[in-house]
Length: 470
Ligand code: FAD
Ligand code: 2HG
Ligand code: ZN
Image 1 (tube, rainbow, N blue to C red):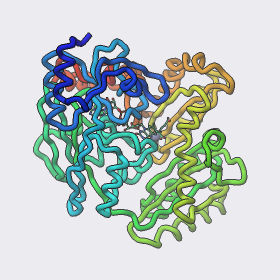
Image 2 (tube, rainbow, N blue to C red):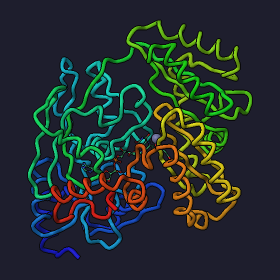
Image 3 (spheres, rainbow, N blue to C red):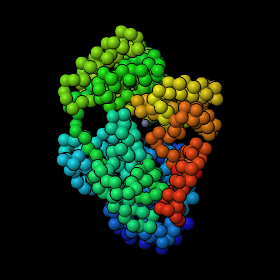
Image 4 (cartoon, protein in one colour):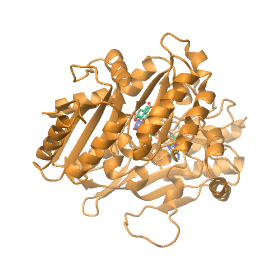
């Protein structure tokens, strides 16, 4: 237990508006979205500045108090939730909301870690620029959380994931020192790239308090279409053709099976399948360009040819922003709709794009034979070689009984991932959920190197204990 004197000293650093210690205030911070991970803490600290974070870490270091950093609490692997024994404090970044600067000529934005992803997108738009990271939780997740998980989302195909969008970082180390790497330089070969250590480190190496992010020109033309295809193989073939037809201007390429579309239209208000027939697979395609007028003819030619030779069964193109939003709504409805359908065992995994059709086929056979009646919902960022291979409980089954098969299902699906040279986490991270799986799947020399880095930066093991590292 943390001694009361230390808790008081921590409260004094942030002042009366900078912490929660009443159970009813802290409760939403101690459980993740699907109720899979629950924790306990005597104190949620909410510092408002980097110096405050620094003083908190210094105090926790001297008193040997473990710290669990938390952003918007949208993470999917339990990394942001403390252990149930109440021995750690939670450090929320949500009051660190300063937009530090925008440099349109350098195409960079410098921000505090507590801005939401949407606030950063909006700030970029106001400067007539694009910050391209985009994901379903963007109104709630914080930039610090995006950095700590190296978030992906729906525009990685064109712009890369959070790591590729980051030039500079500010991190408070375990002992309270501030590591200031807040540079907007695109070329800096002055030694090891330290910022990359912290991106994707899930709170285990330092507290991210600020970042310098890349901006891009805003597209002047965006085309959104949905196509019905027979199989993931047809989708992958179409992606290659679409990239060739547009000169690499495909921004997003997402797939969803019939089951996912049915969940979305059944459970979520206002979501509608745009096709008249129940097609087995649907791909959502977005292309964007800096020059208005060039994309539409290219995409129309592509689809006409693909309809002609049978690669595509049907297609709809959005004629307005509202129609584009309606097509995206089908895709974004899948995670909440799957939650409403009951328990699901999730696998956020990646394989080479070319191996994706075989992976989905083989993993589906494995899942269905392991739990008869289980319903595979394999959807998502196929253009990045990333699929959310989620398995929903058999209709009408008991949720907890189904979820008790989590380890067996995960082990079996990860074996198929490994057989295709894939990764057991593509974009959500390791957290608590995949810690043990990491021990089996990560190269042992890589694991040793990761442990050496952890030892160098957090020798007392106070940063997010029990997460990521096996
Ligand atoms: P949290 O959940 O609070 O924390 C996540 C991890 O980061 C934890 O380990 C935490 O300790 C650590 N952390 C948080 N802030 C800091 C900090 N400042 N310094 C150090 N460590 C920190 N993810 C994707 O990649 N792609 C998607 O398409 C996607 N879609 C989603 C859709 C929905 C509906 C939901 C609910 C989630 C989705 N996610 C997706 C997962 C999640 O939104 C992202 O992982 C997001 O980046 C997490 O941000 P957060 O602020 O909520 O972090
Ligand atoms: C998405 O792409 C998210 O929508 C969530 O990464 C995936 O619910 C999931 O498994
Ligand atoms: Zn995703």
